[in-house]
Length: 212
Image (cartoon, rainbow, N blue to C red; front, side, top):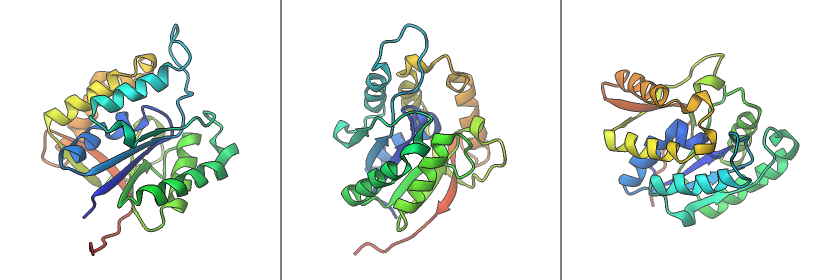
């Protein structure tokens, strides 16, 4: 149904936290996976040097076995995406033309983080002819839940995800990096699908196209 997959993270670590297991599973399935990170400027824990997050993002991609040539890291101002909205849209259009993805993973439409909101809305504009799935960040989805698409995961996919998450040492001061919390959510989503683990997504747009 889809062979070329694009994951878009407003910040480094967003996709690993929300759908790192799905990234691992799709790679294992032989899908061509691309990863676009819009910024690595987020705050770090005390004592980490400038540029630490970018280096962590590269290590995280390696942990999931992503081809480094298919990882693009940009440097937009964190929490200021609204001021460069058109630039971000232009960047996403370029990605669409270069990659021609069948499906794109973006933040959910009900994610209240300002950078996540901009990323989602501009992706909907840029990828009008692609399937779009919105990944979940529970802390940012305080209004409702629209997760009705699930990717079941094996233990090995979760292990790859946790290695990628662990690569972000500078971000471990955040509650969302709590290992028990991450695994518990995956088990909860798994219980909703009759599997050990899963990740859940909002179906923003689903398009089935015959391959020529």
